[in-house]
Image (cartoon, rainbow, N blue to C red):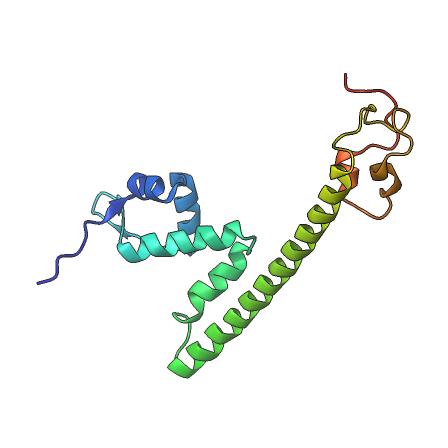
Length: 164
């Protein structure tokens, strides 16, 4: 006979997932998790609940809105037939795929920007001048401000003094 693992209480699951009990309660309020309850109301989470909560956290961490995660979680149970469930789930998976493509495109653009900015900043590696427009008017970073948006995070063209 297969012995099922002991269910986790909310605090145990929160620790195992590196999250808070409030987050798990919020997922329950949003219809994303449905833990069993003891007669006294204690939440008990199964291995499936643990896996689902981990996947929800992962997707939310990637920027997928909880509404989209909820739509995927509820698509099959809300369907009357397997065919309807298949259509609903496939629709949400296609949307998730498009979201992933968008995230990948944004990540690739950020990686390219960071690489370009690093190349500019590396040109200043051995510069003895103060890192200001007045201290180094020929700075390659200053010259690239209009072309390189990340430089605006590290360079203020109106800054006149040195570090305070």
